[in-house]
Every structure is written in C-alpha cells, then in structure tokens.
Image 1 (cartoon, one colour):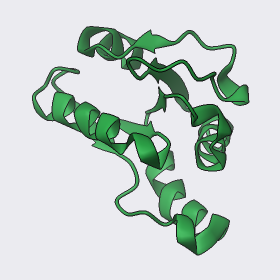
Image 2: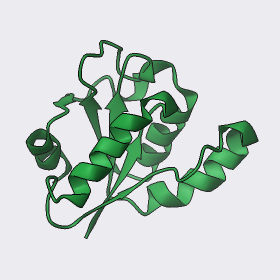
Image 3: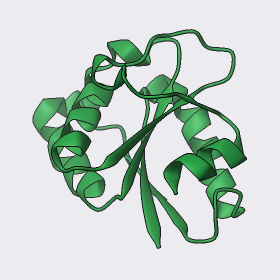
Image 4: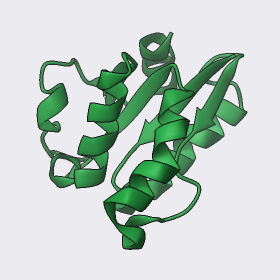
Length: 125
C-alpha cells in the first residue's frame, strides 16, 4: 500500500479533503492511503508542528503539495517539503484550480500536475 502525505496551507483544507475523497473512492489508485495533519497544531509552535508531522512524513512514500495562491508563503509547507526531501521522499506539486500563486522555493524545479485524479494518480505512482 502506498502512503501519500498531503502538504497544504491550512486555508486550503477543502482541497485536501477532496484528495482524501478521491483516494477513498479509488480514483487515485487501488492501494493509496492518505496521511497528513489530523489537527491544527500551528498554535503550539514549530516544535509541535515537527513532532506531529515528522512521523507522518517519514511513513509516506510521496508528498503531494497542494499549490494555491499563498502556498509559497507557508512556513509549514516549507518545513514539510524540506523534511520530505531530507528523507528522500518523492515530492509532487499539484495546482489547486483557479489559483495563481508561485511554487515554494524548494520545489520550483518540479513540474506541477493538474488537480485531476488521473494526473495525480500518474504523478504519485
């Protein structure tokens, strides 16, 4: 079973939930498990974020970064990408529909996939 960690700016949570729905309905493949934050730990500071998310990222095979209008300004997303890359995880950026924001600096060299089930499924294979 493939585990995919969803990295996103908290304000884009409806799009994370859409990915979870697609996975539940097997639109992203037959053996996909979605992981990510299970609670908003931002108020606890960087240490709380790292303690909560580190094990989830380590357990994932791929990190799917949802790119919206303000993702490039998110310290949390930057941390998740850096942590994932340091653990040699595959990082896949997916563009949230109708958004224009730039990619986070650490993944500017990556090709962005469309927010479509088939495109995401191919990218996370």
